[in-house]
Length: 286
Length: 299
Image (cartoon, chains in turn cyan, orange):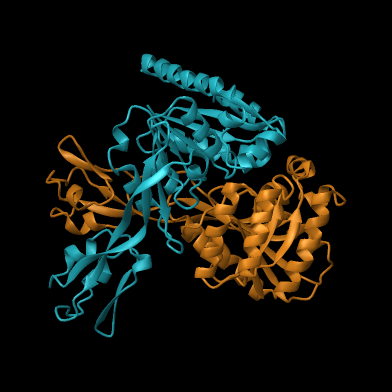
């Protein structure tokens, strides 16, 4: 089973829930897909011993073959290749690596060279759990290709139990993370900001047709808005993590909940069992 | 006219609470500084929840195009699938079909289809708004879930804010930024005179603060740091202090953990308006004074 842990709002506790769940159920694989701000390694402390560069194929124009016809620039939807004064210029930071210019060039003057977008790293934890994350290069806008290559790296995707830690929000990097997941846990906090962003994230999982449940973190702060919303929409609240200064401090130190409160291991195992039964019910109905 | 952007790297460190407090503090200062507000977190726009905006104009955002295959013309040759690098084209019976969510909008398939069966179609992926808020004009937007091009929408929101600022002689554009360091953050930071980084004193917070400091440095934008929930984990706060000292970055505020911040959010108010005397409000006021000093606009 592949479970993705996501949230509309940042900082609600995605990584806390994802890493604690992975520890409690002894997940086989953990993939941290928040390549802009990867944090799960801080909590899981894997030994990272394998690396791979993430590259995007960027056009390179052979000036001796180019006639300046401008066909490449006509087909490029991202204004990443232009002809100025008979000379063809490439703007790598705008290029999506689609290869369209290479295909249309009548002179075969375009070849592609790899441009580095980021780095993938993997390794294992003491207990045997395999771990991978991606690190987007600073100044590089495109997170999606890094996430895509991360999920396709090695044979992580074939494992029996996979936990995916998603970036925040509800746009393309989240979509790329959730692709192929069996279930999505949305972590939220019971505040107006948390509720507003939970609604967006739930719209997204509905659009992707992914079964979804909620974990309420910092339960006890804020108001009843999240509870009311979940009741009205039938979105199950599967677990509540109380607001507690000791927990907050433990997380700040880089500890998972199951390390801060070992008795929470059972609660996360229960959460996993609940997800299984929700999926079985759904399968039974379909 | 100056432009300041509030960023953090890690999500949920308090960017919006800080930006809302600053918007309130500016408005309390008579007419000495006139500011326009912009919410650049178009994925999850929260500034509106504490500024009570009244929408004045509402425009569709056509973020980009996606490929559509006409099944009546498609001969089922599969060229489109073979040229697509985004796994967006799939076989469906005797023809092919484009997954609108996976489509990158590159149009490679359009130009390669031998039958001319594929066209690009403009998508409305969100809306942007000009509003009148409690504390002045607010530009904000809502990207539809599952959409791309949040960077473009951020750029649009900021452009609109800047245009009004230049037209009507405002002193400042205050931008509430998105989390992360990728596409929407790069759009949010570009053209800024100053970035205020709201850092959280935790292992993850320190890690991500370094990523956003590197990003600001990469784009040549000057930074100030404000530590939120500064007292919750002193060792983390000390790490931030040491790092900033080493990088010669000024720390303009150390906001203590204060339940008034969440209470204010529930009331739909900036904390400085809800409980002006609370510890968080007091340090936010001091931080704002330092920020305005750094921006070199009269206060």
